[in-house]
Image 1 (cartoon, rainbow, N blue to C red):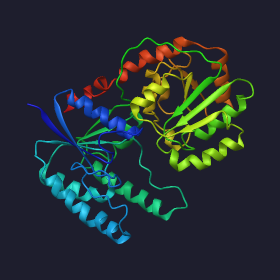
Image 2: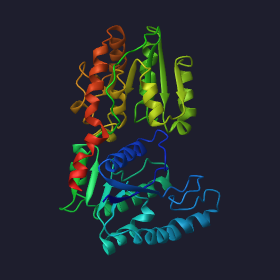
Image 3: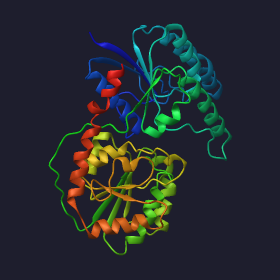
Image 4: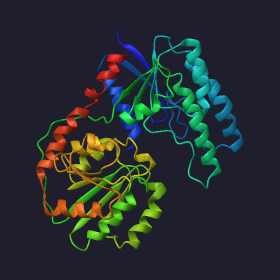
Length: 376
């Protein structure tokens, strides 16, 4: 008889649109389903124009502020509580944090029915948002408080690195367990072959932000553009937010015919595209978010068989050995990234991409969920 898991997520149902969180949750679902669990997914997203009973709340985007405020702080929490109370006591509950307005009814449900709770936290808490926005600062502080409360009601916590595991233990009860799942992918061993071109194609796929090093990458490509023929492809789920500023940056650097921005792709589309590139770069800056850093996209980057160049921060060096299964650069050394790219172009080594592809097998979702299944 299959065991039942109710997954409650903020992500859209039935797709990922390039979202690292959605991709990660979908693979955990698949791993559990292939280990004889029946996973039913419900979303508390309210910004989707979709008629689906598994979306818990109405779309109120076009409603008045008063109505949206009323629903967010009163109607939705109450209806969420009654939804939870209908769940069988034997069902396991899987959550990816929760919107702060849903934490109190969720904790009350846990106290009353005692279902085992599995939570997924992919990042450290941010106590204070960037200065300049009172709304974002208040939201950040409220999220921090309620997510910390939520951890006290969590039985199993899934995190991305050992550093995250160590960090979150102070919020958990002593009996709670922590499981580290750094990356997840659907691995298939393949013969790696690359079509050579006169133009060296470099790619960044992921969230587009200054912290993730997108601007640094463009600046470093500008330094070598006069020396070698290169093309830089950039796409990710936050393009619409940063397109104007990135386009201006491209023009100022004189990279109009070299850098190409594109809309986010699904996980499957991304994997196919990565295989066509000559070099994949993860140019993350060494800032506060670099502690315990493991990018979820690293698994798919390695799996593609295309050589990967990664900032040597966080726990990257646990998985990438320079010039063996990938390349490393130091984001704190001026022009180390551009020098490394030139070195790779002038001294190509296809074996590095092949070794990266073989290493990626350890991140197959079935291998990664073994510990979770054993704990359950």
